[in-house]
Length: 70
Image (cartoon, rainbow, N blue to C red; front, side):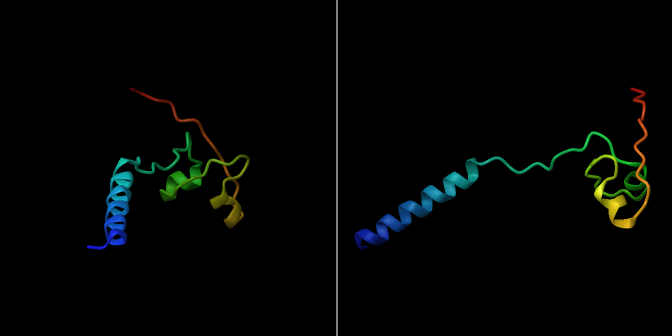
């Protein structure tokens, strides 16, 4: 094996170990979904006064607090 091939293999090994050490991406959790997104089970971005889903459809966007009963 030539010295350049050895260097390539070593760099490939270090890249593989760096990938395994990174944390997985976790999507940002919105604290509360609007009524439309909740009813359709869509991902609500939580923008106020109107989320992007309601804004795109031209619907009124309503956020109603849900009481926790735990």
